[in-house]
Length: 54
Figure (tube, one colour):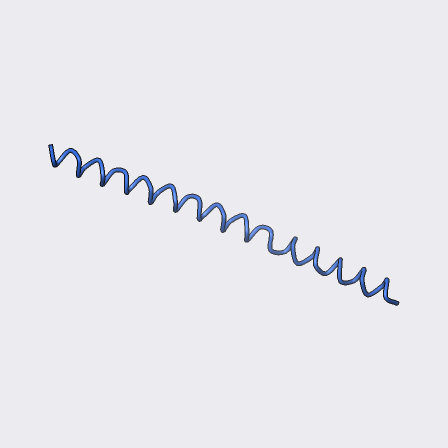
């Protein structure tokens, strides 16, 4: 009986991971894209500020 319960727990955890895997991939991609866009904006603002000082 204990083996059956442990097996069910393992299968349930694997199913939950498979269910949430696409969400985690989309979240990571979104975060990576947002970071790239923000850093590009900051660099362009810093570059504009440097050119304005000269």
